[in-house]
Length: 343
Image 1 (tube, rainbow, N blue to C red):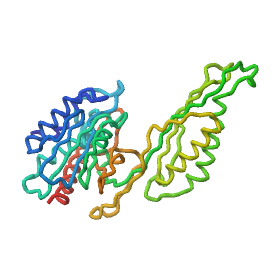
Image 2 (image 1 turned 90 degrees about the vertical axis):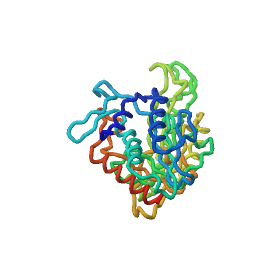
Image 3 (image 1 turned 45 degrees about the vertical axis):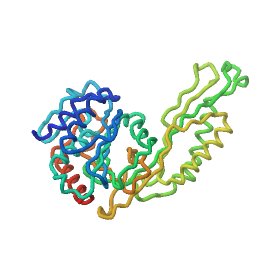
Image 4 (image 1 turned 180 degrees about the horizontal axis):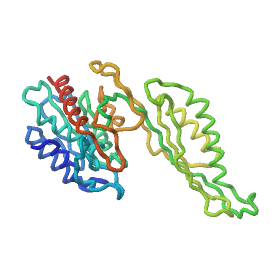
């Protein structure tokens, strides 16, 4: 098998919005079967295992984001000097391919404990794949590798996330007599002002040094209200997200938002609520964390989680690519972890 052939094959599947989900998991299943892996379950997810007692697991999502027209030949892995271009080459078919190549280069018969492998769908939009596994009470191995792109750095923690969609209800009236109406837009402005005051005084000032951005962040992503410049707005939608550094902030923020919602006639929907995590892994020493969310954050019944994948980190970029050296290094890193955990 030629070097990078597996990655080339994976990139060749159009898995935008899980378009060729069946084809890619069939390919992965047939590949791992050659090395003695058995299929545990297969829906749009694929779960496979080797050995009777699995101490180590690997998880990778097979879907990718969409691309724009400037990305030439997105489904054809192309090498230019020491860079490999292709949609998903970084996020995260590079990680999946690195795992598959690793399996082909080790003597599995010498392992004292087994390996379990998970290949999920819908990570880029709704996390449906990992939620399916969790809701089916999947028992994950005590150590899990998540092949997201990290530029070969091992990350063992992540911030959490709180995402809200909030609708403000008003009463429509002509702007020449605004007292006859109730402005949903103005209520949203007052709500956001008070929420930001609370955030600046009670949340942001708590420093958590383990993160690059060492505090919980707040972002108002969407404000969409009103129907005309000469009408009092009857409805306004706001979308807010917090990247949570301290799990205690989840309850504090929820309580504040619910109080403000009652004050300003708003309906609150929590879109996502995920706690932060940090797993100390003794043989790794000091490790870094990430501000973004991965499927590692969704798993609770796992003792140690590490996020490790290729680089440079060009996820979601035009002409997504990785370096040859990073890919080769990743295979060696995966080997080292397998030897450490399973032998």
